[in-house]
Image 1 (cartoon, one colour):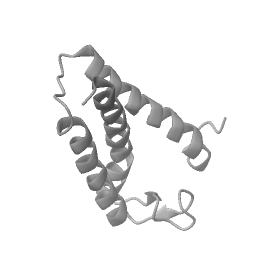
Image 2 (spheres, rainbow, N blue to C red):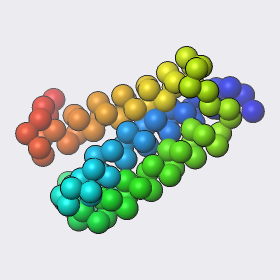
Image 3 (cartoon, rainbow, N blue to C red):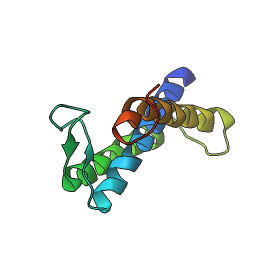
Image 4 (cartoon, helix red, strand yellow):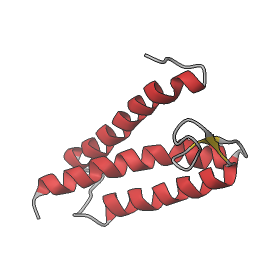
Length: 107
């Protein structure tokens, strides 16, 4: 398998892991938060239990995409850069999308 496929997997693994953070933390804090299961999806709020479960699922998928594809190495700049770019990409995208719901920037 080509290295570029590994980098794509690491990129999406980083994105999924970063996405897990707000869901998992909101769930643990007992707070409702947007999720794909809300009505309307991405705008309404899901319960803290749904978010805890969704965050846990995202952690598992992120793990699989990073650890079980190729030979991820924390000492490899390319591997870490791919994960980091995925995490930053989803962070900026969701900040822009959901900022308007939580008093952030809606640009």
